[in-house]
Amino acid sequence: GAVVSQHPSWVICKSGTSVKIECRSLDFQATTMFWYRQFPKQSLMLMATSNEGSKATYEQGVEKDKFLINHASLTLSTLTVTSAHPEDSSFYICSARDLGPTSGRRGTQYFGPGTRLLVL
Amino acid sequence: QKEVEQNSGPLSVPEGAIASLNCTYSDRGSQSFFWYRQYSGKSPELIMSIYSNGDKEDGRFTAQLNKASQYVSLLIRDSQPSDSATYLCAVMGSQGNLIFGKGTKLSVKP
Image (cartoon, rainbow over all chains, first blue to last red; front, side, top):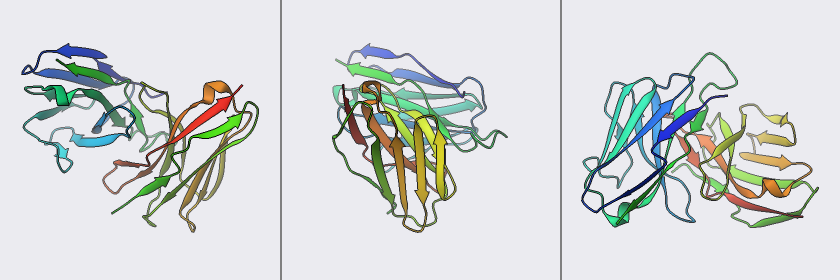
């Protein structure tokens, strides 16, 4: 099946530092990847849509200068949390959309395992 | 605003019973529908996708879609304690993004 990886799975950092999270589609190409955030006992919140070769589209209320997204290739998108603060502590999850020829998977989003960020 | 509604639960069923999870959506033009399962502390895992009216079966899972009623459901037969999780209904938006419901928490009691 379609596999999406994320790295790192856990990050603990000091307030004011920047953290980069990588999202990779391992067995398919993804022109579009999505970044979500999930706080405890809450539902997934879409942060931004990452398009290969173009600028990301951010959801309302998400600071584009704080959450930098780079989708440099068809299999890799990165999210950098700049100058992280304790309120940025959350579970960050990426997903990748499979647009390959297999009709059963076309358009389906597959999620990475998530990155848990704790800012001290 | 496009919305996806789910009963938050918790839905509690005994082991071996059928669990029925329901979802309604507001955008009549939606074409693609998905059910994801999310265990506590983990990311969502795709269970089923459905695009056409009717039933789609995969093992113990059956997804049902009724576009006229704007209704999607997921049936889990022979429920097991390992099925205890939050089930997320999702509808694909016009930009290829997923619009999620808040999820239904299912508890299967041994």
